[in-house]
Length: 160
Image (tube, rainbow, N blue to C red):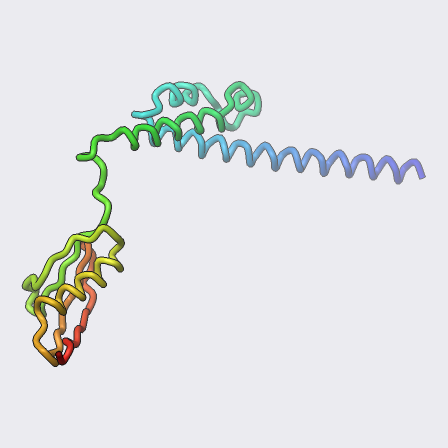
């Protein structure tokens, strides 16, 4: 009976060690990811990058010396604040620029939309119908948005 309890106690100790090993491995990976994220934003997060310089993510004691998740959170906050404060000229304009071309590649119509490429496609389709259509005519065009690949756009003009 005593030997069975002893074996069970050893098995429990082994599984506890295995579990702790897995936790340590996961924490080391999380630390490395946090370190990489801060390093990628070094310009905005110089203080946080310095905190990570001496940190050895493989060492449990080193990880305990720096709250790496908190440091990463501070960096992400700085990055977001920097993005909000960027001048309008540095921010990407919202919306999509799209155009339609004929079979030879000549631009038929261009359009700027405040929405996605799908919205721009619908808006330019209506614009082509209003400005370029002749009653009953079928137009074979190519649609391009923000430098993307051309997509076939066939428009059947209303018979009016």
